[in-house]
Amino acid sequence: MFKKLLMSLLIAITTFAYANPNKMFQTVDVKEATLLQTTKDKLYCPNCGMHLPKFYKTNHAVKLKDGTYRQYCSIYCLVEEMELTVLKGKHDTIKEILVVDVPSLKFIDAKKAYYVVGSSVKGTMTMTSKYAFEKVEDAITFMNTYGGEVKSFDEAYKIALLDFAKDTALVYDNRSTMMYKNGEKLYNTKCNKEAIDKIDAHTMGEMKAIIGQEKLCEDGLNDGQLQAIMLYIWDVKLNNFNKMYGENEEISIYIKSRKDADFLKRGENIHQRVCKKLDATSFKSFDEIKKGVEATCPKLKDEDKLSLIGYLNHVRSGNQMHKSTPIVVPSDAKCPVCGMFVAKYPKWAAYTKLKDGKEFFYDGTKDMFKFIFEAKSYSHNYTKDDFDIISVSDYYTLDKIDGKQAFYVLGSNVYGPMGKELIPFKTKEDAENFSKNYQGKQILKFEEITKDLVFALDK
Image (cartoon, rainbow, N blue to C red):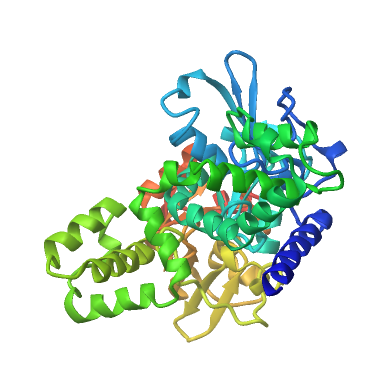
């Protein structure tokens, strides 16, 4: 009796979740979505079977040289096909990679898009959300509202690839805790099992489309229930998930860490007790961690070794999205140049401390330099020599860095709260990479920045 009630509850939860799709940020009406695939399964992501309009604002696509398209619910599924399945080793067959521009809902060239990575808006198939924009102003507005960092496609793709094992464990956890059980129940009670078992589908999207279009289950099932049935058949009955990832140790460890609340804690304790010399941040890959553990702590029992590897990899992965040490801006601090509250724009914050102890905060480096060069114009009797400490926010990491040692990109197409900006970086390499991706015109050191150059930014 209890099992029947539990299964009824699972079905009800899935039905409710999919019956209210417009509560998700990603979702648009089918009429608003551009469907590039022309096959019968055009509504579904070929890689995971999810409904493309339901996750439309994270949709990606590839246009192949033969003129056909493959459309995905997310960059996660794009990465999976590019690196592991259909398109692995076949990148030369791709003519163009596309992504949905969030404001216009149109597909645009992904290589020219501005991605906001790591915002508070939930992503698709990932713990680190990634949304794309055609215009940098739209990306910055989104970032200022929801957080995150502005990245290029190559940077967003690299993050998705680095996070792939962790996100795959998340996907499996979500499926195994509800969808598989729900799908099995529906398959056994509401479907033509004999007909479904004869389906010869090449993708998850194709299988889902066949089940729905050929009415192999009772009428009235919603998209979420069809998804659950397809996932149960594809992943469990056909064992495809295990065939693909069953021997992937990194994914297996992430799955274990999600199911065992003490798994990573044990690894941390082992690290502190017997393997403290291992520095997680020094490893560049999961395989490097495995080799490091084998070389440094070979006598550990297998379970302890797994926990240690899991802990070190967790720390390494956590450092991929940098935990910044930003300029701390008081809530009432106003920029002395424009009068705006600086705390509203923490990612652009700059700071100076004068020899007399007076502190000022700015909503961008441009206003900071204006004040350094022309404090008298803003009702303060200071000269350039009076500024003792100058700090700016590194564009990529948001770290507080020494403004006198920073490298500044001039003339890029990235704008701050006050328009055109001098974009600061801790390293010349980061400045050069940014300048290349965002059409920067010059890279300047602190002493190369002049009063005329700063005030010309407003023209």
